[in-house]
Length: 482
Image (tube, one colour):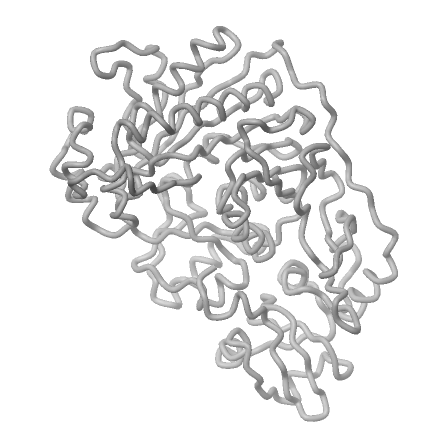
């Protein structure tokens, strides 16, 4: 979602207590609510189950003293005792997990993506929810990640590469005017741009940039997004609308307006969350009655679960109603099997590891791979589909870092198992020496997969005569938060 700050909208009082005072009648314990806002958010990570089990990730986190505690409602996600610099932790850089605030995990959970579906994330940046959807689809099928701001989409590219996502196409478009030629979608997430009041715990300056006028301006955009989602959704499909704000103008009033517009073609579904405390959506505001079904929406107040604030509504487009008829596009493979097989053969990786993928795009950086059953939109034309597996800008061509993270565990030759000290030096992009024993699976000087405890970290260049290694870990990843 996007939070836009406009200094002309700043209130004179920038304290959360007064900035949010109009919500006091809605909060069960105002004192605890305000106190919670003064504390930092707990760090939460969720497991990349394409690469590791939750149990093994938990052991790795425990070994680093982070005391991971599984979320009661999501055992594959862990709350940590402290917020580490994720960009310096090997398990994060290796794509074993992703960091995301706990409440922001709820919209995709309630979207309930199923393998084989075609799903649109209308306001995808920075990409955490897109990644959740892609994993729920088991790295198959189709996820379309859209956002109108190109700079906000750049983190999504890093997430796709780090986690090894092969079922995502990224588009850059105003979602309220998203083309019907994109085809129909089984499920759509509208994680809408909002005033961001629920993010005070990590962005206190927002206390001076909110107000009723601001929320009403967002209201119009949010209605347009939800209206377009209804048009793009298949009959019988699901739409989840979410914000990280408390404002009824951006939450229940948006849903109320669409329910009135769509009549029987749109209905609210009950939200089912076990072991996570929520409050029901409001059914009246400022003396005006709203649709009583809004009680099925959920409000997440920060003090209930020690999270940020959120609002989520689950909607269903009536089965048997009008569905988009535009067909989806298909991926056209490029005839480059020799190059693909040559790069993969160096590491003795069975071709079965990538049999379900296809080369579909060549650019100056390399060859993009995507799952064979992926169906991108006819319009808008995707900015990228899948991820770069092989880089052709080098001589010879080489497996990309993302490619190494994805399939490096299958390597049977030309890989090096590093110790913990070498691992950290490699991730810092510095040269280091290895022992002859560590090179026993290497055939010659050249590209080598660096691994730690069997987990691929990326690509290196081994000089086998001197047992020296040059790290090729990406400069844009090394030593920084992603």
